[in-house]
Length: 491
Image 1 (cartoon, rainbow, N blue to C red):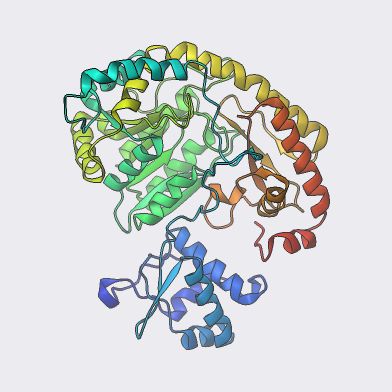
Image 2: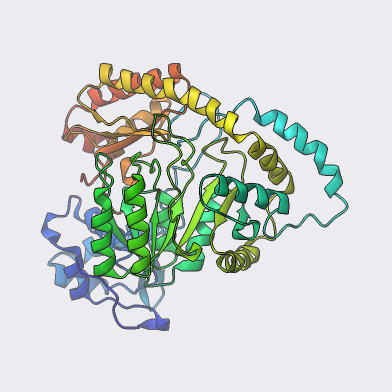
């Protein structure tokens, strides 16, 4: 496909011609049926991948129908579906304009309630140390109540404790190089908002954390994806270097340790070469370390932090307590050069004046005993990982599953006749919540992949695999998949 960054049109926005759109769509005669839904999906993919700028005016229905050799009814129905799904808006007398859906992952967000096996999100249960940490934090809270309660960059003691953790890992860090945020996702959003402008290219490993793609799309950027092979993650370095040379991205987002969802981890040499190469090309890296402390096998922990040895401004490191401790502790952080952090703090301050003082006190308590907390989490995760691997080998031996060295989930490759979107749709009524593989890529990539977290107790994981076995048997064939999930494009 070609990039669609046409001349400025109505209200200064991009306007797309029918011929340009047809060229970007590719072989329109191969769109799945019903044809209007296939056309809507293809246009949506262009927006989601950043190839079609949100706010672009689409061709008039009659003009596009003539160019595609289809009926105006088909184009009209496709535009209507795009509007209903939040990927387009209509302006009376002006036409139809593309839009970035507010949340492409809607329906994937965490939901409260009992009676479900929750595997849509890779998040562990709270460790036993969490409640006592809150009790101690509450005891410290009265000493702060006479002040205004705003800590724009974070509690000074907490910033110092986070900096000390980086220093202990081999990356000397001062407190003014740390910005405390309301969770790791919040930290990622701050980094993207500071780095990415409309039209900027962003290099991503593929598959990747869903929020990264969403942030690029929402900022009007363009995703440059490079396939990550978890069996040979170091090969990504050369591929990323080529992409950086050819595409001149403004920024890169990657997870050097136990990437979500693939579980890949870069070797010490590879991470050093990659960091140096991207910086040489002028690319600032957002390095997500949310799972860095969750190495489960020997040799997977205590690797040098990404960006060590380079100028601090080369990397914005994202971290937090949501995966290592508990998702309910909404404390994350950013680490970079002090001047960069000050700029990020200004951006963060415009969004919210402070992070919860109580949660920051809790985080301070947790960091003081983080090593034993982490060892307890790893001790619980190892048998859960093995139980899930064993259950899959017994009930679904045709699935290809690689054992990750750490992290929180397995990245399963499905047999050719199966689709993750169909499995997710069929498992829901059976009480099993899952995230389809397409959540972790652009467009419809990875529909034959399924992420399975091993964060739940063994009996729940075994029950989940039992549901998966029943569901896949019921699906049976590709025709049954389409019957179950509706018009689905299978990658």
